[in-house]
Length: 357
Ligand SMILES: [Mn+2]
Image (cartoon, rainbow, N blue to C red; front, side, top):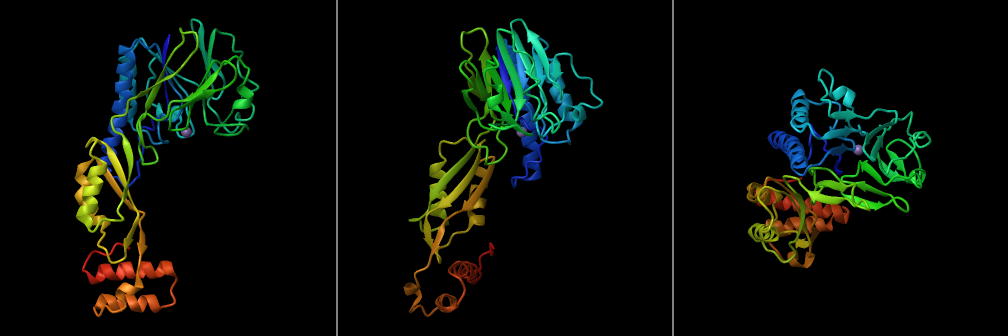
């Protein structure tokens, strides 16, 4: 039997990562479309079971359109069963109010439940404050050839809400522990024959979710279950560091940013991190660079992590207003950090630039 395991789709997310409302709305539709595309992929790959291991929705507020979109995809793939477990962000009883849940879409509750497919059994439970400590004692007997357990939380050696106590799941005849909560794919050994796996999120939403995102595939007919990660997201988020130490002006910096990202698709999202050191009087405008780079990708962010350096000697004999200003600040009893900040702002004001404090 072929199984697809996904988690952390976070539909209807506010996406407050400085995206415009428009971009956030576009991204939310894209995440829904990725889910729909995933169901089509599952059907074409003859997958019989899709596991959704929590945080399907980002929060309590779920739009009717989103649920309509999900259930349309589910009913369009009637040969697939969908097993869904709420995570710490979502609650299906809220989300599906006023909707008829399709028969091939099954929700776990706060009590253990097991669904059997031939020689494969999938047990799952929604973690709540009340059951987080005791759910391990109540784990149903794992008596099928292949036993899968679904939970949502951070792997741990202790029990508690949002924690999955691996010690209490060892030697229970679990072949595959299907987890959700961590947004990056990872797979490790649970005990001698069992493994646990986080598929990661389906689409990255912020720059803390860079890199390839998707789901995993399992085949229970092979001797040893081994998940295969399938990158599937419609956009990828990238962190790009650009050392600007030897660069003289904004155009040179922008060219370096372009060079570092020449292999990245225009549809992706890029956060530039400017590093290195620069002279306090050099012209660096994040706003100006942002205007230059903004249309190069779907979404662009620029972070200034450069270190400002001041060489007071350079201004010793400078008779300009700038020289006078720098000498004045350097002679004050402000902290070094404050001096840099004051000089930076002052120089922007003197040069007629927008002040970026
Ligand atoms: Mn979670």
